[in-house]
Image (cartoon, rainbow, N blue to C red; front, side, top):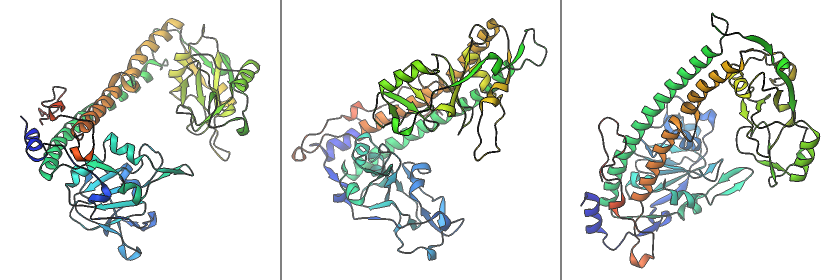
Length: 436
């Protein structure tokens, strides 16, 4: 029997009590605004709400920002053990991200932060508030003007399992070890991914460089000689809606999830009457992040006129995938004389690329495809392995922090300590392993 099992059998044999944060709070309150201009290099440590999303993890000991507290009105402090919540965010899925402060200086909480004071283990609370169940409760935030908000009452209603302190501390010990192991594995994989990306870029540039002595016949051609720059007919804003049949990709959502749609009827009408990409064609962003490329998968979709274009080329001469890799070298000149930088059709048409025989194009594509999958594929390769480590961590964290509720508190999904990752047999870093 593990130490955790012993503690649970001894201290909470009939289940674990569930309480709301309002019930365990010694105090709970909002911070007070600290503007960007009030952040200094030295002074009183402070936290602004955006830093909870971007800078701090489960817990932190030192603040990255400081301020002159003489310039702050209505000061709101936090200190050791307090839990901070960011109550403004950009997505429902991430709203009210929280972290524990385990440093020993008195700090200032900025606006849109809720501070929870309590008598529990701070790391335990921070871990349990990061679980899938807790995030579902946090995600009941209200959306207003594309920004998601939470509040002190909403935070107070979050319900969590609250075992006795010795059980909390043993869970923290296990999760600290598992977190450290996961971080080391992720760091190793990330370093390997960085090295592979550099290697990939080196070989891509080498394979597409025909100016040296290579036993390959190559013809330098402009994209205008290869094909015609094409674009979809312009869609007016009134023709789109958040709900519809066919995704409409604007420059801001190109390569991402769409936020607008057009009707199937309009899509069918325009597709018959105007140019439309074929499956495999390489779409190019001509504004915003210029030269971003997406390979069209053939599924129903519509694209924003002159901001997203493609070369309507003959694949018996130049393969689409070869063009895709050539585009990564940014062969075109970008016009910067206007209000915003832009890639005009004339710039695209005049861009020159080397065109070897089809057999050589296929060989280059095969090599670069393998590198691309290793570096970028979210279903295989290193990014997939990094994502798998993250999901494994989240799975075991949620398992460890799910308890049968006390009988008088109502039923809850049971979980046994024996379900947890005792002597996890997966990949290790530095000879460490996790034991419960």
